[in-house]
Image (tube, rainbow, N blue to C red):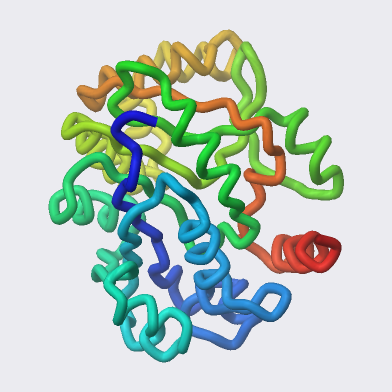
Length: 261
């Protein structure tokens, strides 16, 4: 566990804008407060984190602190000091960068729409961080996801050594990890400009990815070089960890899985 015992934690709960399909479906401004099986997603995430031995103080990044304060259970946690609030900064990368400035490292990051989050997933991730890494992401292979939730449709990054889906868990271990947040911000800014994205990531890396010759290790090494940090991943054996709630179908799936138990 090392540097991740009692780790400071950030939960990204900012608004995705007025057109967020899940928030609209739930009739709320922030999808973090859409109930799944009767419990708001943010509260589900916080409960899972509180049950994780490695987790320390939990910070929620949100533009509307009053929404958190209005929930009885979350308000009690705020009063106890175990839960704290930070302002969301307009995008996930900006919120993470601001949290790194305010809280330092190590910092564990997850999202409020990770409605299925379980303590054992958090513990597995934090106890399997590769030695020497500055920043680490949790990824699940397509076969693990399909075995756990065969009726889900997830987005996969396909590399020469496998197809992976993100699990919305990140470990920013050292000050060098701030470089990844800065790179993330650049990628967000250029996501609608493919040519600039290619210039940023490098044409050879893009070509190898398109040809199916780029390994996940090589991709992480390239990202790390760009960011001035050592990037790594944890291969998660829990396929369900790749399920977050981004659309109506995800909400229905999460409801079904939680009702099933």
